[in-house]
Image (cartoon, rainbow, N blue to C red; front, side, top):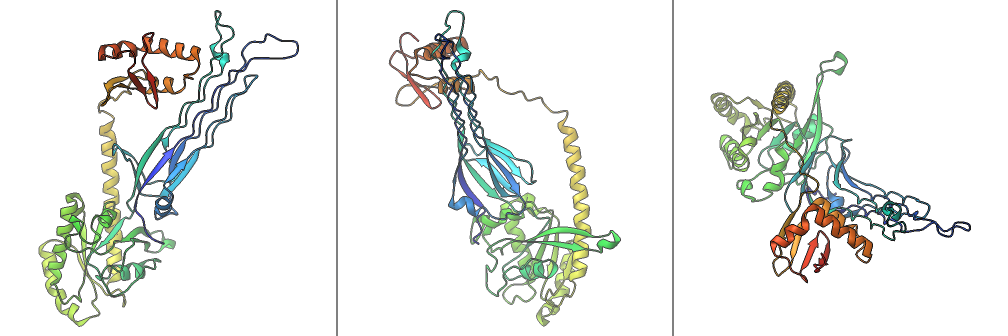
Amino acid sequence: MQFFDRVKVFVAAGKGGDGSAHFRREKYVPMGGPDGGDGGRGGTVYFEADPGMNTLVDYHYHPHYKATAGGPGGGQQKHGSKGRDRYLKVPAGTVIRDAESAELLADLTEPDEPLMVARGGRGGLGNVHFATSTNQAPREAQRGEPGEERWLELELKLISDVGLVGFPNAGKSTLLSVVSAARPKIAAYPFTTLIPNLGVVAVGDPTRGDSTSFVMADIPGLIEGAAEGVGLGHEFLRHVERTRLLLHLVDGGNYEREPWDEFEAINHELEAYSPDLASRPQVLVFTKMDLTEAREKWPAVQRRAEEAEIPAFAISAPTGEGVAELMNYTARRFSELKEEATERAAKLAAEALVGPVLRPEPGDAFSVERVAGGGFRVRGKRVERMAAMTNIDNREGMDRLEKTLRKMGVTRALEQAGVQPGDTVTFGRVTLEWGAEM
């Protein structure tokens, strides 16, 4: 399966069902009053994390998703059926943003926490709601509100506790296959790993209660210039952003580059991409100790690591030399970092309790702006909804909309902005011609 970690999708919630303008008509009740029921709410679109998924490939080939519309109201005040909600599953670790504004909507890391991304439209009111002492036979019924729709950007950042970084062929895939049940493809040429591989590593004896497990990610090999997008570049660097600890593998069998130069080159790429990422705790892992050349180079590398106060281990994944010691240290260090992160999160949560109080914008808030090329646009949640749910072919409905616009202050705001009879005024998806009577 091809790996996709960034896609763009379109989601549309269901339209609300139209209200009914029905009148009671029975054999012995020839002049019955209005009994039109309300339309049902349209279906809503949600995203939720699924730990069993590891790619966004389905969304690459099928980028459009819609929920169903609500049913129309009926006579005898029958309420329309509710539209079916749409639940879309994504891999844990998916970041969701609004494609137009780039606003971060959620970072889905835990299952069973659905995120609503498009709300279903309200059902229109039936004519029974518009009966008054002066209008006992209203022929007005609301249209269903259109469902929300938007383009979204989905970006997958793998959830791993420990990340393996290093140049291609440094031995990352081999190490992962040895210490976990992961079976990555391994071969002796650059960019062997084109897909980040995950493996669960268990250290200790669970029967004694001293076992620790963590998720390790084999990140595709970097090359110099990756931070500027050379090679695989940003496409895979983002996958190490979530890790708490980096195991930096250095190829002990590389004839073309000195080991410490290789170590510093990768750190330079990490620093250029994200200073925060480069500041993560690292462990230098010198690989291929089964080779004579690697054994000869190790003392010098070990000495440089000690001077830089960086933990260093020499291993041979095929023979198992040094692997157990490396994994034991990794498990201990990961546990320490996890505890530190928990303490920081608790401290930040406590500080947030005394922060500023944010209040939602009033539902009646609106704005008026001139549109390039002529006309005006009115933005606002309530006013756009009222216009969308008004049957513009019904005189009673238009009269009610006009009264609502005056009461909200929209009419006055448009007049102050210079609206003239004949100008077009757009409310969301509805465009009307401004008349003298409005």
